[in-house]
Length: 592
Image (cartoon, rainbow, N blue to C red):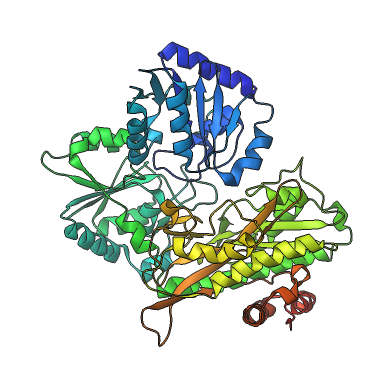
């Protein structure tokens, strides 16, 4: 097995053989997916860094990775012996390495990159940034070819999400999309984001771990629809249903050639964030109209059926969480239980639930200092035992036929310190402020974000990640277009009724502990207040009262917490056995 240093040396050799000055390895696939199957994890294979965001840059003498604040601590650990330099940009990752390339590469350099893994918008930005020094981006797939023992693309069966098809049939979705196309004066639309394809067709798959999507492209014309999908992935019965809806199937790898022969004089609508540069070039820049995804805006507003289904799913998911925490707190030898053991226990309880497909991500179970690593993932060999005292942060979720869940709780094992309780309470106050706000239509996530941070800012504290992200329905746990964040590019979307979003402020003290409290919230219209919206909290699990400084909460905050715990008790109690229910009643006791 090659070491990381040997792999980087192979890339350096490639840089010199190709006449490049640098080579870029983004953590992407041809659809610009956030999470990837092993087939597309070349950056991970070369560097050892497992974070979902980040770019590896290799020159003849240097190797470096740029990632965002969620992964700073994780990257420091994973890159410690690699010889790869970690860069911590204050803004977007692409800004960071673009500036570095301009500062370190000589005039007229060539930079290699697989354009299948580079979106049109990122290619355009990089080309503009590098043009002043005459640096040219060049398409090259050699780094993928060196990826040893590379797993093939997944080819599991694709299935129909029957409840979604009954609720909002694909025929109706196609009709709505064509209406939007007509308003834009377009007759051809190429959908490249995997979750968009899955949503339109009411199909699901298992190609990416924790994401029930499948590798495909979807073309929508005025009178026909073409699904570009590898052969043999849809059974004859489902294929016949698609054919009835005038949807034909062509091999996945034939799209580029199809675009080359796209009719003269016609233009194609596509999303610049998920269309890769290689396909864009195949079609021709003058024949593509780039806009934001039509589908993204349609799918982010959940239907009444989706909301009802999600309510039942979140109750069952909360009960699974309660069973896991009850097991932990009553374990006769808890000091021997590891972070990984608890992650496995939690997944075991979820697997017993009706409609369970998978986790929505591998559980983040971080004890003490590991909780400060925002996306920490315990492994069997290095997982910390839950012995002694400290804070335990558990962020987890499930994929179900009835929806997607994502919830984080921080609990005290043993007696918490006054500082831990103070910090936890300030995070909770921010969570409650966002959960209970009433706001006018036209409000964006950028405007709402301050509510989650203001109590931390009072004492010079903050957290370096967004406060909230959109969540799909039996789809990606991270879904656009809405977000709650201090960064404009992630939070400029106006909130609408039906949007499902996370509410997850936190605080991370490196080397000591992490705190995060996360629920899913649904944007709703305020009754009798036309033009105003609010968030309904849907997630169900108690918040650790042992970590709350009760006199720090005002009457409104206490009332919110008591009402929330009353709902948790009434919804989860019937799903638990006698001893678990008694445990839950204690956790949901009112505060005064």
